[in-house]
Amino acid sequence: MDRLEAMTPSEIREVHNHYQSLQDTDESRVFIPLHFGEPDLGTPSFIVEAGCEALRNGVVFYENNSGRPDLKLALAAHYDLAPEHFVVTCGAMQAISLTMLALLAPGDRVINVTPSWPNFTEAARLAGAEVLEIPLRFDADARSFSLDFDRLREAAEDAHVRMLILNSPSNPTGWVIRADEMKNLYELCRERGILFVSDEIYDRILFDDRRFPSALGIADSLKDLIVINGFSKTYCMTGWRIGYLITDPARASQMARMQEFIVSHAPGAAQVAAVVALEKGDAFVTESVRRYSELRDLVARRLSGIDGIQLARTEGTFYAFFRVPQSADSVLFCRTLLEEAGVVLAPGRAFGAGGEGWVRLCFASEPNRLNEALDRLADFLYM
Image 1 (cartoon, rainbow, N blue to C red):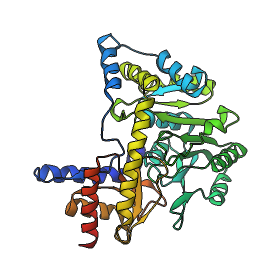
Image 2 (cartoon, one colour):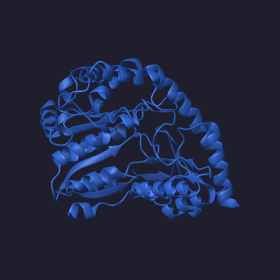
Image 3 (cartoon, rainbow, N blue to C red):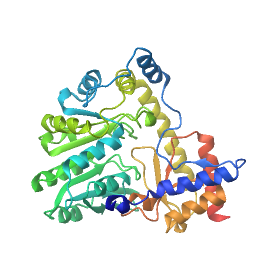
């Protein structure tokens, strides 16, 4: 019961629940929800058909705890690693939870680079660990974030720190770590005997010809590293719940055995669909990123034209992260914006240290919808 009581409710969900209650009260009102982090178009038909065909062909039985061999082979080819490095999970969130439960104990501490997805913190707390949040630094002139290495080094001196979590490309900031920053962060973890957990689920959603410096290309040994990824964002498969983790084979084997006692395995038909996504999805990903780039530019242009808004540069992901004077209490701001303008955004406070005063907008949506939302936002701010 202590762990249940210690959980902090998601403030994104709090705004969402308020949105749903308003919808139920006034079904004629048109709301514009841009608070959840998922693409609007849904899964492409060639992936959907692969999943349906798998079901029709009888892929409805138990699978291996670590994942179907065909999916692990496809992942191995994608990363140029052996299949034994992979554990397929029920979404990237379950990969994160599995990592926390397997490798943390009460009394351990975790460094979390924030603002970040709130589920990192809560998953660590459910494992009994304490979370040390180290916020990114924001350069207002450059409109960009960077790691605060002085604070990270200081936190890493704590003998109880067992793990460091990084998400880049970053939800919610849109920041993409540089190769030298990734190398320095990995070296810091290795020197201190800290496991480096790199959540790279947005690794293919990059803009302006940027390349993502995966921790896999920097680490000397996967014994020091767990990489988290999945199919939700890249292939618009949020509801399919297919993710995976990458680590050294010995740890992967142990975590696969542990999976037996949590979910047994990820759904078989969804794994078959994921194979097809990997093998045939490159053109879809390229077109998606082109579309997101145009939507990013549209939103940045519109937000920059609203007096008082401070906008972070989106280098990757499909989020705009910004602040206005009225958003000092970001939950109150989002609730009031929802009630008065019908626009649903995610409050920055939900994303931990450094997030308060900011709000997140998911721009993976139609241009007309985004323009209408931004018109309403401008009217709300300066009506």
